[in-house]
Length: 144
Image (cartoon, rainbow, N blue to C red; front, top):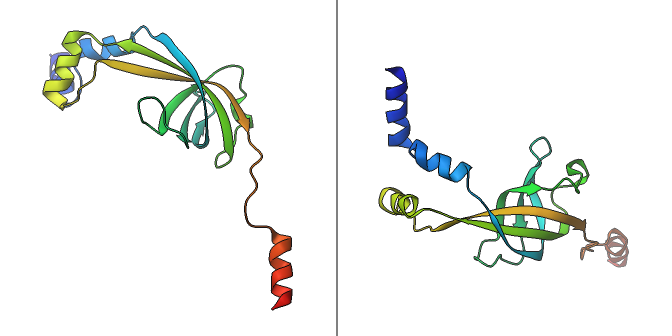
């Protein structure tokens, strides 16, 4: 009896179990691999995932990728937040069933027919110089 009550609450507050299972077991097909520049917002070394802010948008218009999968080729502990990187990102997608698409549209007003998965294939830190140079500032102060 407790299970039924818990299941009913889950249906009211979240997705039904069948919908969660469909999302968890989605079969992703590779679409393309792209290069973008940006920086890490967050890095989860244990789960090998990261959040990235991109300077150039993805094909769907987004500029933030949450929980991108870090491939085994990259050592997550070597990555640093706040520095500019050039990323190689593999984009994959999975089609949603008509039933799940309709549920999302009617219950949550979300018009979605597919979901995306992002894998970080490589991350190369870029050598970006700032306009601020401590030696130039010191020289300017001496002239005053």
